Length: 448
Image 1: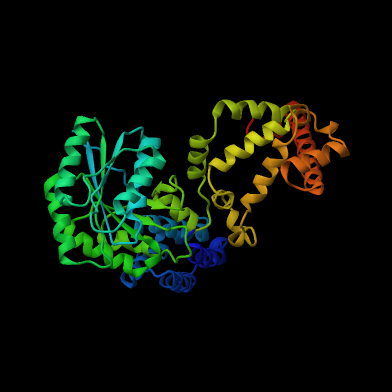
Image 2: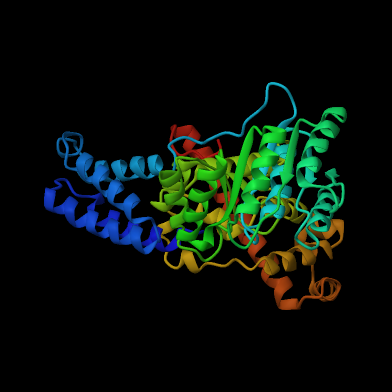
C-alpha cells in the first residue's frame, strides 16, 4: 500500500501515547513534531501539514482530551478524525444524471494511466452498479491509443465508440452521446488525449469537449507515484477545466502517498477512486475514513467484507460452514475455498486489512507466493474423487501418481496432506469446545 512508510512512522508515534492515562501539553507537542516529520517525509504539501498539525494540536490540548478517561486513545481518535477530514471526510459518490446517459470526461497527462483507468471504471460501473457503460476513444494523437481502448473493450466485452483518428475529438464526443442515447447506454466514458505536460492546445481542446457534451463528471487521472507533481497537475487542471473529482492510480506502488493526503486539501475536489493494481478489477471507491484507519493500523474490515460479499458464493459459504462445524471438510471443499479467497485479490493485501495486522512483525515485507497456492490446487486436482473425499486412502503409490500428475514432488504432496489433516483436527477441537460452551453457556465460535 502507498502509505507504508507514513503508516509505520505514525503507528510508532501513536503507540507511545496510546496507553497514557494522563497526557500533558508537552506530550502532545512531542507527538505533533513526530507526526509533522512523518507527513513531510510522505511528501504531503507543507501548507497542508501546517494546517493539519494546528487543528490536531488545538483539539488534543482541548477539554475533550484532557478531561477524558483515556486521554491517549482520545488523542488517536482526534488524529484519525482529522486525517479522515483531510482526505475528504465522507466517500464522494459518482454522479448519476437524471436524464441518461451520465457523461464522464477522463482527463490527465500522458502516462498517468487514463485509458486503462477508463476501462477499469467502466468495468466497476457494470459489475458493482449494474450499469451499461460505453467507452469513447477521443485520443486521436497518441499512436495506438484507440487500439489500446478497443483491446480493453474486447477484454471486458465492453462496447467502444470510435470514429478513427481523422475526426476531431469534439465531434467524436458529441456523436458518441447520440450513439449512447440510441443504444440505451446509461454511462459514457470519454477517454481524452493527454500530453507529457500541460499546454494551451490540450486545455482548449478539453474545454471545447466540455462545452459540447456538458459532462456530469470530469475525472482527473493522476499517478500517485509522482508525489507533489500530482498536486500541481491537479491544481492546474482544476483551475482551467473545473474538475469534479480525482482518480489516483498506482496507489499500490512504492510511493509515499502524500498526493492522496494533499490533493483534496489543495484543490477542494474529492478523490473518487483509487487504482490498487494492474488487473481490470483493481479500482476501488475511495473511502477517507477507511484509508485513515489503514494508515493508523486499525485495519479496514468494511472493505474486506465488501470484497468477500462480491466474490464469495453465499450458498457455498453456508454449506462450507456446516462442514467446518462437523469437521467433514473434503479436499474438494478446500479447493473451492482457495479459489473464492483468491478471487478477492492478493492475499497479502487482504491480511493487511485486518485490525491489528500492523503489529505482526515483518508484515510489511510479507509477500505470499501465489505460485504456492497454484501448486496446492494442482496437487488436489490430480487426485481422484474418492481420494479427495477420503485422503486417508492415499498410500505411497497414489502419492507418487499425484505428484507426477501435478508436476510437483512427493514431499509436497505429503506436506499438503499433513496440513489438511491438522486443520481437520483443529476444527474438531473447536467444535467440541463449542458444544461444551453451549452446555455451560460459554465459548462460541465467531461465526455461531
